[in-house]
Image (cartoon, rainbow, N blue to C red; front, side, top):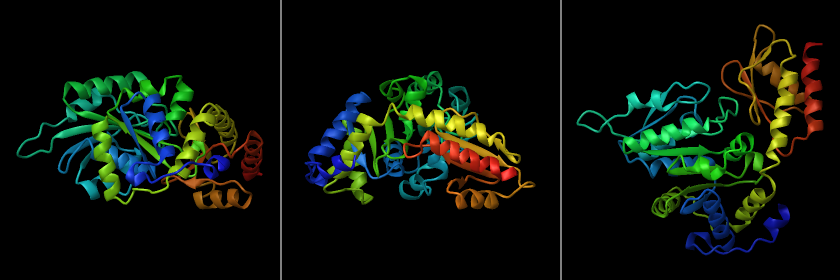
Amino acid sequence: MRRAIAEADVGDDVFGDDPTVIALEKRVATVLKKEAALFVPSGTMGNFLGVACLADTGDEVILERQCHVMNYEVSSVAALHGVQLNALDGDRGVITATQIEPYIKTQSLHTPGTRAIAIENTHNRAGGRVYPFDEMKRVKALAERHGIRVHLDGARLCNAHVESGVSLADYASCADTVSMCFSKGLGAPVGSILVSTAEVVDRARRLRKRLGGGMRQAGVLAAAALYAIDHNVERLRDDHKNAKRLASFVEQVRGLTILFPVETNIVVARVDETVFTVDALLAHLKERGVFAVPFGAGRVRMVTHLDVSADDIERAGEVLLAIGR
């Protein structure tokens, strides 16, 4: 990947003539079977652009209460675009079409109109859960019946694809805008992409510029993303296997409980703070070279990725098991 970055053919992406960015955008649009794509610096920007292109100021977007857009993007669509968010309680990150339908609003003198539904696959705060494909199809059908649209936060969509066997294009068919990250498990240093129709991507490109997201010789970053697509998708299976192995160690530690079934690469544990505090646990792990993060009250999160080997998992397991000794 470093070599691909160094050898990247570059231009000026703000003027639309960086050949490596163009190649990346065409590749992803083709794989996801959408008309066009836009390379952006981050998943947060990709989600903002996706939602902002589907809903205008004063409109409402329905989403799941624990999703990334709601919790980890500094209220960007509300603060910068004036979109109201209507958060529903999901079942491990999943909101169903049946659950959503009663909350769809028709615009009136008193109410905002519901313009979009946002879903997340895989779901971060639900421990990397894969959103059931059949339910995604039902959500899309519901949206079409009501004349509204769907945004898919697919930051870890490749994880969902590898674990479920559902193609990226099939997942993308369930949404009007899709964001996908090249960092995280795919290993690129930075970068995400938004795919949609050519018209939506043209609008997103203008909004990207407004946010300061227009990049010049961005081909050095796009080259890393292309390398990730070519080499690092199928190996996500290793991350999923490693996460399940890590969870098997966590389950043996008194005071820790796996909070969600481990489907992909995220392990979330509840901490019994009568045994030890979250801070004490994280300090113990960090001192021994195992890094985890606090994940809400009484919770910690650990994530596997391409820089964590099977041997690393065994070492992390030893550190975890030593807590109770």
